[in-house]
Image (cartoon, rainbow, N blue to C red; front, side, top):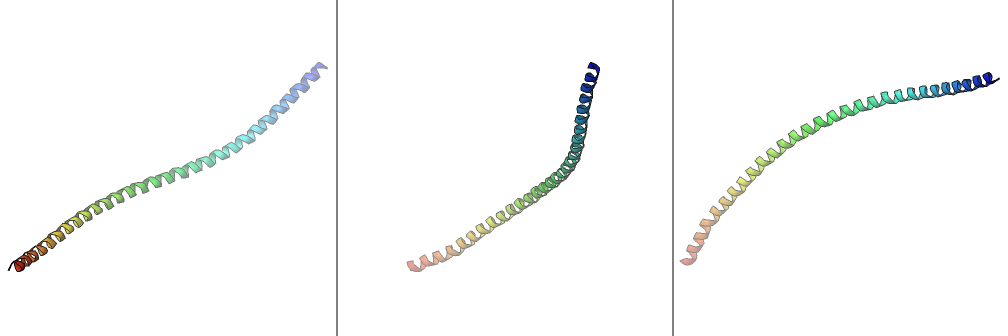
Length: 105
């Protein structure tokens, strides 16, 4: 009789173990599916980061070009302003002298 009782306990343990194995097997299948999905997402993320890096490099290069062009134009503007000031000073100077000569006479 004890033999049958021991057999029943072992059978119940085997049954519970089999159920646990089946549950773990289905969980592993689900995890494999998640893993494949994560790999796809990481691949897409890596590609997007590569595109972002290329864009940032292009922006830096074009930004440098813009800064250089602005520098050239600012220098040209400063030269133009100094030329205008020089022309205005030359134009005012003779007029002021003739005005003084006219008032002195």
